[in-house]
Image 1 (cartoon, rainbow, N blue to C red):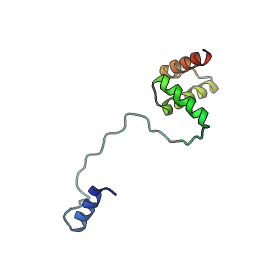
Image 2: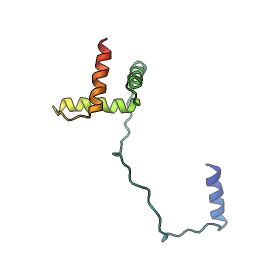
Image 3: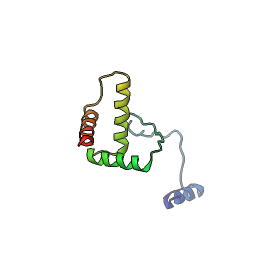
Image 4: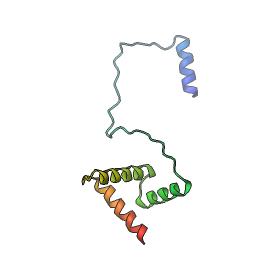
Length: 100
């Protein structure tokens, strides 16, 4: 526990802090992005290294690249043509680098 939390708890216990349920508060702004769900995926070390290298080459985080690959795979399964342009460009760049 941080020192700030400990000091705040001690001040509250001494009665130096007032608690008012009716006080008006300002809520934080809503997120601009879609909520994300965390999934645990186990990868062999070699595959993880390849994913990290591909993400570095694409200039994105590995999690972003994995999400885009999943989206591309699902799009292919559904015969759907709508996919983000950035994901498509990265997939083409990755495929081109894999062939060379």
